[in-house]
Length: 95
Image (cartoon, rainbow, N blue to C red):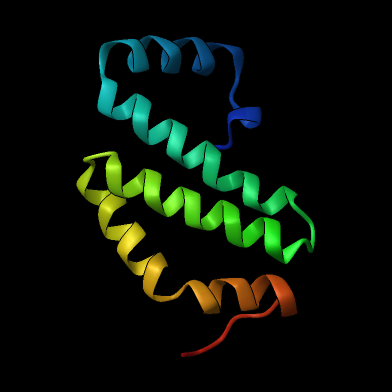
C-alpha cells in the first residue's frame, strides 16, 4: 500500500494510510517524498523543469532525516546526469 500510486488506492486503503501517516511522522514524510518524486514523470520533456525538480527533491530527501531517502538522494545526486539523460532519450544508460 505504501508503494502504490496514491491515485490507485482503494477508498479503504486511503483511509488506512491517512490514519497511519497521522500516527507515524516518518511514514508521512516518506509518502510526501514519494509523491513529490513521482511528479517528475508528469513533466513531459521539459528537461530544465525536471532538473530543477530533481535537485529540489534531492535536497528535501537529504533534510528528511530518513536514512533510506538520504541513501537514495546520495545515489540520485551522483547519477543525476544519467537520470536526466533517460528523460532526454527515454532509455537507460548502463553506466
